[in-house]
Image (cartoon, rainbow, N blue to C red; front, side, top):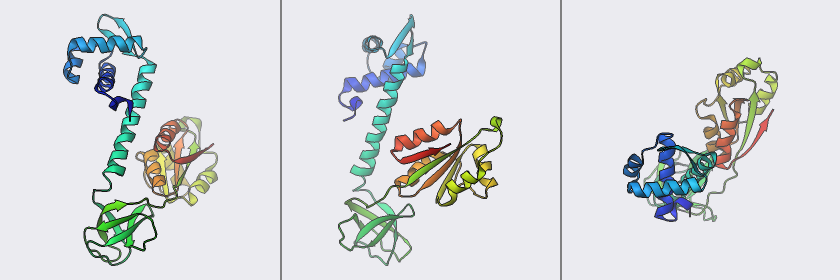
Length: 257
């Protein structure tokens, strides 16, 4: 269980620290108490504990600032909460929700189907009892049409994709020196994203139109989680944001120089 969900006190401690971070350095304990739903006295006790633990430092009367250790703890707790929420949404509730799939053959409503991922999309086929993931159709569909599926069971057999991150110099450092390397890295990748104007231009210079230049790391991570290889072209200035997104998603990647 995520620490901040273990008990009410841990959750309140997390919320108080977030409120301090939002209001720092001038912190009104009364405003925090109202936002969190506890008394001002309770907020004072939480702040004192946070100071003692090194998560908050006092700069003067009613003036506090979250320390690096405090920021790290909030960030880690928030990340754990996000992952917990995703697990509940995808794994726990996923079995009872309805999703859409591409029918690979004519299907009738109420039919048990085998589920697979192809080109990053969920596909439903007449059940072959191969021990893989299955579901039950909620609608009928002809081959190639969209069909509703629920009652998910089992695990979809999937080889996660790999992400190649290609670094190029920012505009102030001059032109791209290895255009051929950019082209080679993207040649066989079904998903190519670009981080920044320089990356878009570098791709277009070698005849590659990026799949997207919005949230490039997140898009590449999502593609890899669906079994697709991806390439991300990014300036050296932005590579950290890209790799953070890939690392948070737990996908396999490498960075070229």
